[in-house]
Length: 174
Figure 1 (cartoon, rainbow, N blue to C red):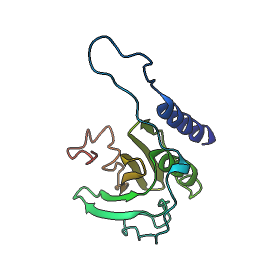
Figure 2 (tube, rainbow, N blue to C red):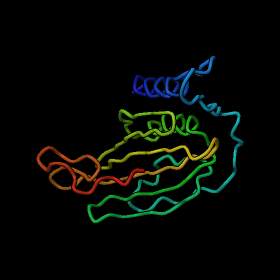
Figure 3 (cartoon, helix red, strand yellow):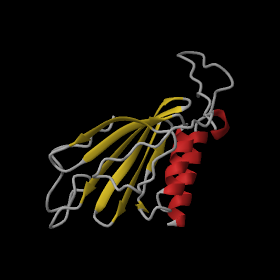
C-alpha cells in the first residue's frame, strides 16, 4: 500500500512538473505557455464545518476540509454520487486522498492524475467507490465521490463483472 501511495504521489509530481515553456517564439503558429501550478502555500486554509455524507456513503470516508456540498444523486443501479467543491489546489486534493483514505481503513486503488484532473478508486468490504477531482481555479477543486455496495452474486455499478458485461449507465464524470 505504501508503494501505491508513493506511486500516486510521484504521478502527481510528474504531472505537475511536466511540460516546458518555450524560450523562443516559434516562427509560425501560436505561442503556448504552461500556467503556473499552485502550491499548498498559495491556497489559504478555510475553516468550515463538515457536511454529513448521505447514508449510502460510509460515515468514516475521508472528506476534505472545508468542503462545500453541491448535490447528491442516487441512480436506480445503486450508485450514490456526491458532488462538492473545496478551496484547495488539485495537488492538495490528491495529497489529501493519498494520505487519508488508507488511514481510514479503505484500500486505495490505482488512480490517474493529469494537469487538470485526478481520480482515485477505493474500496472496503462491500463498498466500492471513486474520488474524482477537477481543477476549476487555482484554489478551487470540484469533487465527485461515487459509491456503491456490492450486490448479491457480485458486481457493482462502479466495477462491473465480466459476466455482467459493461454497464449501460456510465458514470457521470465530466
